[in-house]
Length: 116
Image (cartoon, rainbow, N blue to C red):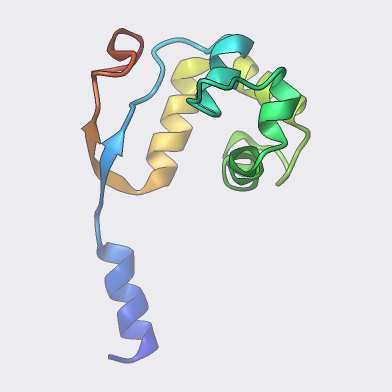
């Protein structure tokens, strides 16, 4: 299959995220956001510490532009922008940009804090 045909085919493939924790109903507090950046029992001491880890680098690389921010923007500026836009707008932007057609949502973890 020539590259152009393969690229065209891949562009049409719908994605299924088989294990996601959903999206927050509300705009997260700094504490909630920092916790979610690790889902670990060893919590970062600050937002900056969580954003200066591997996941934080990836979030800022891939998600910051969706929020109209430069790639690898400062972690504090990233979080501030999320709050300015609000939960509904952040969810709309991220979900529409993801290209995912179906989500298999794990409602067992903090299920009361996510959209169904």
